[in-house]
Image 1 (cartoon, one colour):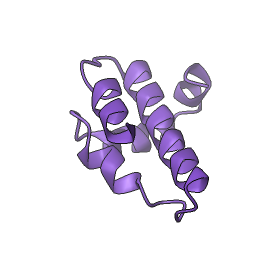
Image 2 (cartoon, rainbow, N blue to C red; image 1 turned 180 degrees about the vertical axis):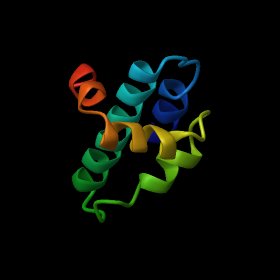
Image 3 (cartoon, helix red, strand yellow; image 1 turned 120 degrees about the vertical axis):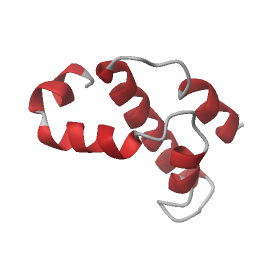
Image 4 (cartoon, rainbow, N blue to C red; image 1 turned 90 degrees about the horizontal axis):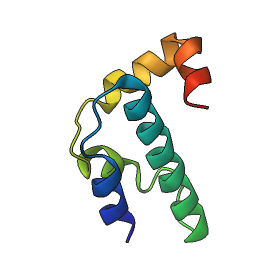
Length: 75
């Protein structure tokens, strides 16, 4: 299920490119899952942050916003 996938993909990541890729994939999946179920776009977003092993998604978001190089590497 959706929450299980988030927990699995959010664990054991150590470098910033991998963590950023997981961050983007998880938030995209949250958006896609909500749309497919007719729910509001951000319905699953709290689960993305709280349902994963890493609590540093806020920092990763900041890195992605500030670094064009990082965005290009995880595209």
